[in-house]
Length: 234
Ligand SMILES: C[S@@+](CC[C@H](N)C(=O)[O-])C[C@H]1O[C@@H](n2cnc3c(N)ncnc32)[C@H](O)[C@@H]1O
Image (tube, rainbow, N blue to C red; front, side, top):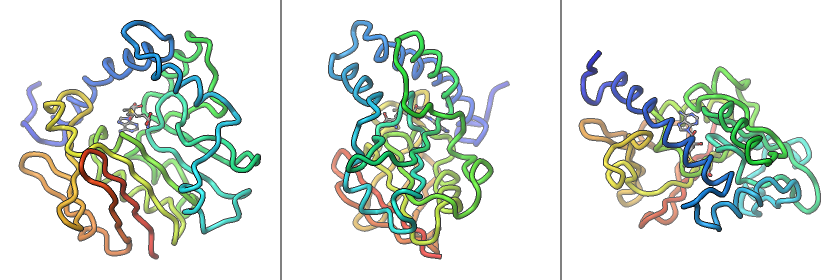
């Protein structure tokens, strides 16, 4: 059935049509099938290394629990998380989730790769029903918020599952939907306008901080990549 352009149903339908492309991309990368750039394959192999170190900038944001007890959520992690697994030799509790996790498990197996912690299935829009409230010490999302069909629901859900004082870090390409012509997973644009974080598509615009009274939003970068920290205040 034809959907009203720009409606939630139309966005969800176009999102579903993007799955095949995403899976083919990751199959190419995992199996190192041409035209895969060699560094893409090397990166997924490196992510599978259980010794991979977590970036100190992520560790610095973990203030709500001792590191040994902290839960680090990687939202829309892909087949294997890019966050890393260890800090200063200690294995931390990294929990990766992704909407396509079941298909990714098959792709990794086909490629002979193994994630130190398998990505578990879950839509980023459903965080509040997957994890207990106030149970997460740090949430991370790279190159994926604009791939989701409802980014504001993702942010609200992340704030529900984060502990008060904990941070959601989002790394995103600026205005990706414009760049990709609103194809497949690319349905939303994210940009900074001065100090404001704006998520938009034609006919819809969210001023993120204005919609989140109990959060603090800070921005870095914003030319091609934008680095966002959203801290739950209460
Ligand atoms: C470009 S990849 C980035 C993966 C990983 N974060 C990285 O940086 O390599 C985008 C990921 O978002 C996932 N994704 C898209 N929409 C999603 C949603 N609504 N919920 C969960 N994952 C989603 C895709 O399956 C894909 O793995």
